[in-house]
Image (spheres, rainbow, N blue to C red):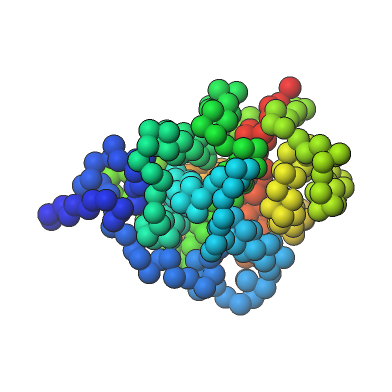
Length: 328
């Protein structure tokens, strides 16, 4: 069959990824931008399953709209444009290899004006893209140099917190979508010409300390003080809260996902460990072959979804820790 060729932004790979062979690029699916549910991307799920997951789905949907608003003014403290945010989202979606997500973010990004053609703008976008790809798929390579490079291209602490939240959120979304597609029996969709390397696991054992600036109490807003008080009392967020609280609305919704995604089932069948491992390392390969055995070994469908989604959320938090600090 003849290979069709695509150029410009008529395919998945934006400017910073133009080194990929054009014959490998996949065409845009413009209709993928037009969905009612921008988190689950209009997957046709049974009502009872959606109801069982509403506690964490509702804040996840709200967080999507906070991260990717329809109107986004920029200023000297918050410099990320809609293009910056969506190109970061597409980079992470590509790193995860979940086609439904790639289609969605590519379709949203395509009509937006990119940055100007100056050397500084190109370097800035390239640095953001490289950082996003590394934190999403190889978090073990993120170090002081990677953090400093974001500062060197002009990102503020507010920008860096948002970028890190986008990277974590899209990784979470990709894995949740993969789980629901497995529930529905959708076949795994391989991306022609693009082998997705298994993701490495972030090392977050031991005591953790922040390396990014924390919110100073004397300058904190009422909202920041309220969020600090609330989420520092939550063990999983205690250490991260002073950094994430630069953007308290994002922190609040992240916390709501955390407290509503806990699954207290005592069952941990062997198939669950295998499913979590594959979902963590290779969300693009997760399918019914990993999902179905969970019910055969005693979990309900809702329990299986919540346990897997909880593991995806833990990956998000671990990447935030890698991005914002280090283990001692």
